[in-house]
Length: 242
Image 1 (cartoon, rainbow, N blue to C red):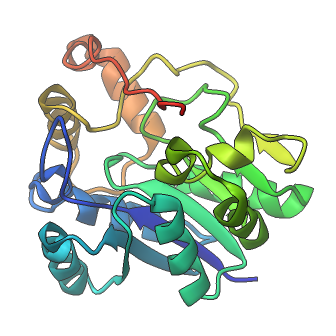
Image 2 (spheres, rainbow, N blue to C red):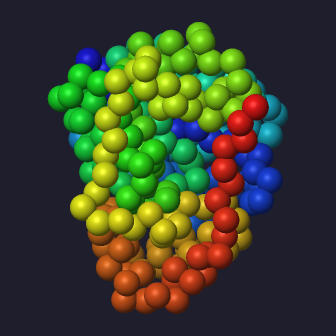
C-alpha cells in the first residue's frame, strides 16, 4: 500500500497573493509545509500539485530546489489535479494537505492515515467535525474514493475543493471523523491574510527550526494570548455551493 501526500499549491490568492513562497523565517511557507509533512511516518511520497498557469512556474522552481516531486494540472479543477497526481504516483492512499498550513502536524497526518487503514473506511479527516485548530486539517482517502469523486462530482465547488463530494455523501462513502479530546477549533493557524501571516511569523520566531509540535504551539498561544489576537477577527472563507 503506497501512501502519497499531495500538497496543493498555487501563487494565486485573493487575500495574500504569492503567500506560499513568502519567506517564513528563512524558508518559504511551502518549504515549511513540505518539511513538516515529510516527518510523518506513514507517508511514502510527497508531491506538490500546482497548476499549469505561468505564475506557478515559481512553485515548480521551488520544488526543484527542495528536491520534492511536483505535478501540474488544472488551476480551477483541483479535484482533477489531485486525481492525476495520485494516479501518476500510483497511490493507494491519498493524503490531502494545503500549502497555506505551515503548522501542519506530522502526528496528525499519521493519525488520519492509521485511522483509514485500521478501520477500512474510504475517508478519514480531522477537518470535517472540527476540534483541532484550523490549519491542522488533514484528509486521508483511498484512491478508489478519490477516483469515484473525480468521476462523479459535477458541482464547481466540489471540483475546486476536492473532497466535498466524499464527505457530503455518506451514503456512498464510509467516513471516519477524527476528533480530539478538547475543542480548539476556534484557533486560526492557517495563512490566508496578512494578519494570518503575522501570526505564523510570530510563532516561527519562537522556535529554532520547524520540528516543533502543535502542542508546543498551543502552549505558546496559551502563554501569550496576544498572538491569537493577531488574527482572531479573520473570517474563514466558506465553501460556495452551486
